[in-house]
Image 1: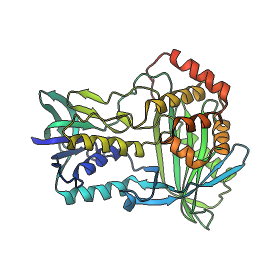
Image 2 (image 1 turned 90 degrees about the horizontal axis):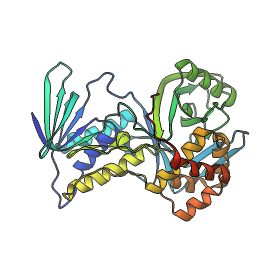
Image 3 (image 1 turned 180 degrees about the vertical axis):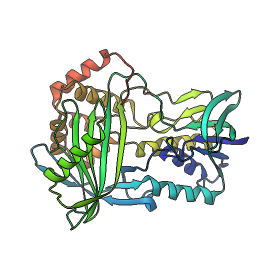
Image 4 (image 1 turned 90 degrees about the vertical axis):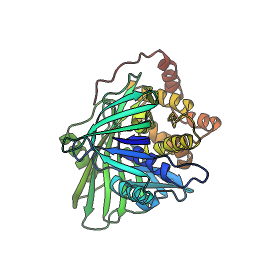
Length: 397
């Protein structure tokens, strides 16, 4: 039996970020004891993946950043390129392996976190905390009793919502025989892809060297594709759109991110909370999660240090979530053409302001100005329809 002030289930971005924040120097505050439970290698561990986000200046995880950029480009469906410098922001890319190594080393050096490799079977509330029962890879039981438990495991099913789309993608890490990429510029949203009947698709290119890049095909739509369909879409994008004819695929990544206006229960017991995507950290309209995780875990750590009830906040404001609900419905219902919508938005709004908007950092007057650059009448119709939509369970990807 392990005992701790805090138990964290899952060692992905959310679990590691919270553990890391709880071990950072904080003069005047007592460091809580922490147990971090991670599933043994196997199907319950997420595959290697890439996280992207933007921030101003240096950040706490820069040592794990693979590459960062200050120039972003968007291609409209007609082929017109829109390229801008996003200073003072930088767009950053982190591989999960590098993030896990950086934070894991910091946790080991701190000596304040006990790591346990076991599959969690149950979480039971107690009068003053909770008990976690788990099992190691060799079948031995492992139990943890903690005052507070933070669970970052993916949900088994999504909550009922008025609108749920999936952001699903497949990417190739490619190496070409000659320099064809500009390492100073990200292809942020290339709308020259074939558009699905419902939703939106685009290409995405993160160049790390003149001859290496991550090239992805992404859709916002109700269902994920087959492996063959992703490969066909990437064949078209790399060959027909980008004109790549000589390259090697060195690795792949695939993901599915829910884009939903569902309400996420961040508390499941008196002392048990959800964090990360399961706790509503994903921005519904974009699928970006890493920055939201950082805000959410920072608030939890601050509450624990001050002796307050550490309910994880939603990192996106009610106003932002309301606007996201309108956009999701407009895309899902076909009230707006997704490729035209985003192409028009990037044509008329500075990218720095759009990125601040997508991260919830704009003021109401800025959001009104951005809204006037969208198809106003269809968006007003979507806004009027959203409150009357029933909430339904999502059948799954």
